[in-house]
Amino acid sequence: MSKIVKLISANCGKIRPDSVEDYLNSGGYAALKKAFTMEPLQIIEEVKKAKLLGRGGAAYPAGSKWEQLYEIEEFPKYIVCNADEGEPGTFKDKLLMEQDPLRVIEGMTIAGYVFNSHDGYIYIRGEYRGLQKIFQAAIDNAKKEGFLGENILNTGFSYNIHIMTGAGAYVCGENSALLNSIEGKAGRPRIKPPHLAEVGLFLMPTLVNNVESFANIPTIVNEGGEKYLSYGTADSGGTKLICLSGHIKNRGVFEVPFGVTLRDIIDDPELGGGMAGGRKLKFFHLGGQSGPCGSPEQLDTVYCCRAMRNAGLSVGSGAVVVLDESVCVIDYLKKVTEFFIHESCGKCVPCREGNKQLYLILDKLSKGEATENDLALMKRLSRVMAKSSFCGLGQAASTALDSCLKHFSSEFEAHLNKQCPAGVCFTKKESGE
Amino acid sequence: MNEKPTKEQILGIIAKYGKAKEQLLAILLDIQEASGSNCVTEEWAQLVAKELDLPLSKVFDVLTFYAMFSTKPRGRYVIEICNSAPCYYSNSEKVAEIFQEMLGIKMGETTPDGLFTLLYTSCIGACDQGPVAKIGDKVYGFLNKDKITGIINEYREVVSCQK
Image 1: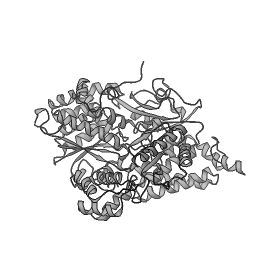
Image 2: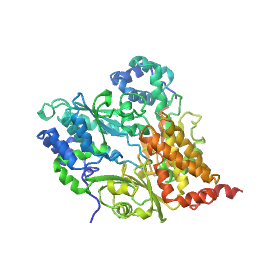
Image 3: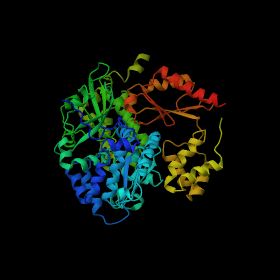
Image 4: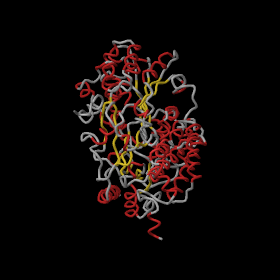
């Protein structure tokens, strides 16, 4: 039986992305029309029943988020789509925006109707400037056909979507930093509370959801929350776009229902297709650089939010980076930490300085200069960063390190004794000696 | 080679975005693209600050916060090689070596003719095609020596045709 279920990626590659006609012919905008016949609270009820968990990485229940915003009686309210897809190994929002932007637009429009909002913003990362043009064309065409703008489909409801661009800052994926960036400022995170539902964009109540989350809304409205839930597991409704990269045969974006196993994802011929290059799997890194690494013993874990969390893993953004036995864990973590040093916004000390210190210790390990004390210090530092960093970036920066300490403690020990099991560290220097 | 944007051009870009403060990033990206030297100089930043009624420090806060901006002139084409984990383990270091060798410069440097600047970048979301590099809006995937030769020649030709 095929492990692929295409609820939201069915149009990708099949239709002209900016063509309203093509989108309508493939069933598009049926959900918006249906939504207009429903009460906003009914729609929120369906999103809750669907158990749609936020697809950007945090897996926060979208239904609860929508309910919280609905209860706030201050206007205007803003709808924001987080398209700052910056987690390394993640490229699924790009697929949706490039190949089926109208689905994202329809999802945002339904949200606009639910909250009686008149302005939606999609914040697309600067690295995706090319696809911003496609998305703009889709917005323009939707407007022309009466699906956006004034008096949509003669319902009296008016709604516009504005594209805002990023300019290269991973931290803007954090929702409050993203709102600052939309306002034309540096993307440093805000302190919470107040929550964004109360004080968000331009200090008004705001909904922020990920591209893939919005893309799921039309399906939920069309098929109903219960049906949508049934595609996935009891706690994680529907499907997930996963992004496979690294040492795997089939790299790319795939849509799978929650409930498949990690083994399916990596080995199924229709999905990952197994390892590339004939080497054995050493570990996999889930949900981007801020997610945990898992070991081959965990391959039978079910891919859904609860089972993954219980196993110390995470769905996160949907990234699955697969690494083979040629990779040294210490070398890998240096790469991860380098990324966070570069992307830390510098606002808080634990993140800005913590990542630098982590890197120094990892570097010592890779040179065989580290001691037991360094290892203990590294563990303590990681705890301090996780507990006291200002935003999610710093709090999650050492997640990969913690998981590797759990699964590969012997490899850390070996480096204390100047041994690199993967043969990556020390080799260059020793050959020169 | 270094044709600078005129004051009118910059005012045109600002007008295109309705002089809106929240469009600062888009305005600065457009100016940088039109600069021919992939940067936003202090002079232009001052003009933007004045037109948008923002303090210059605010404009510089943005210019220095986001990785895509530079306040110093760079090559007409900035070659950004992705060096995040998925690309790194698809041999991005080797790709960087080839670029450095062919252009005769190190990472972070600009060729003497002002044509190319070589940089590393964080993930650009093309991990299924790694190793990748980005030049402007264009992403080049599955890079190897032949492809890199082709890319460099392609950009050199564009410029020689314009002369």
